Image (cartoon, rainbow, N blue to C red; front, side, top):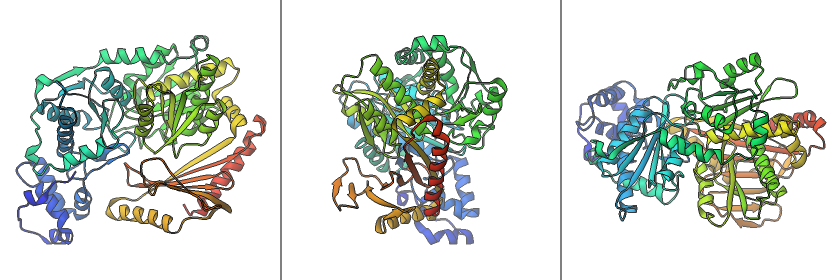
Length: 597
């Protein structure tokens, strides 16, 4: 969100390090703005220290403004326009307030719900947002304590709000925080709202325009009453209460990884009917320093070190973990060797989709109007499963807001069953409109109970799905490229892939290339081009003759370029799983080596 630094600029004496910083006059001018009296003394001192002693950090803190990506506003905490702090949160909140008054000005009352997770400064940033919005004559519903992101999505709809905010940086390292904005349907903002809010924030030319002094009469505390309403809706999702009752003593180990999941997940499992729920006391304490893990991302196998130790000692049946804002769930299941296997997000999505569609079919609820949704980098196993049940599967851009967008566009005409993404996000039902790690935990446990009724473990059920639809294996590789140089390198890499597109990978011919920035899918065999009916996005996909898929895109929330790989083979029978799995692993290794990653 740009601040017009010429308004704030004041001349100061430059030392030699400052002279070096003058190589980029814009950056120094932007920093000098923050030396003004409008900023608190602690901020001014920190900025002055960067100018005097750390030109590289100064550059990274001020070279750009935080932008809304696939996950909203997200960045390292600290001083600067490219950092999460009181002022960037204040500007974002003022921009949101200005836009709400323009977009919803005909309403007698504009309402916004706000939640936050366990990260350092999350409650503080939530209070800053609440104060700014309330000072702009907006009614604010602020959760009394930390809460999972999906409950905020639910609260927006439940309380009839026009917007919502969650202060979180999801699974990022501890130095990060973020600011996710939602619209009245409970989904994260999409065009035109995102661009309009950014434009409003960008038009703020003086920090004095931000109304930091809140109106306490307009800030209302919420908590338990919303929890109860959420659990009442959650309970309606269950499809196999009989199976749960028979297997209610199944040993389930859950860890929130120091995050907000502890507020709802154990209760959700009990609401479904499960009674034997174990935890890891050290990881149940909300703590933004995440002291027991190096990185609070449940996609990282290392976060399960403590859980696996306890699971082996207690002979646990199922392990689950959620990230700090509890919108994503990682699942660990017992394998056929008696040890534990961490499922990928694609595998969890496939298991849940297969279970839900099976039970909907058995209950006679598939009437021809039902659909599921996946993102373009998510496994092609999902549409294969959907086709097997004659259910439509939509493909959308990366970011769960696009799954919610499909739900919104088909509301009243089609019935949404579930949606998933490879990054362990899943949503069942539409009473909230973002990925929901709380309900996912409950439904994974239910799927395990149902599988047990069929005489299978979740691991065996996964193999059974592969026999029916093909064995799919996936891999994600992320290359971190920080700062200005890193951003430029990522940009150039995408330019190079477009100007010199790959025609074969690992000896297999590329038969289709999809460029979502141009909005074109090209058949490289026939030369035919077709339009991609999705918003433009900087993503490239290569579909190979042997059924493999390679996707490349810059992250919308982190300084990374991401490579998504998927390979497939037929699985004739369950007893051939290991050999076919080894073959697919070898193929993934060969593809990544061919791309020199």
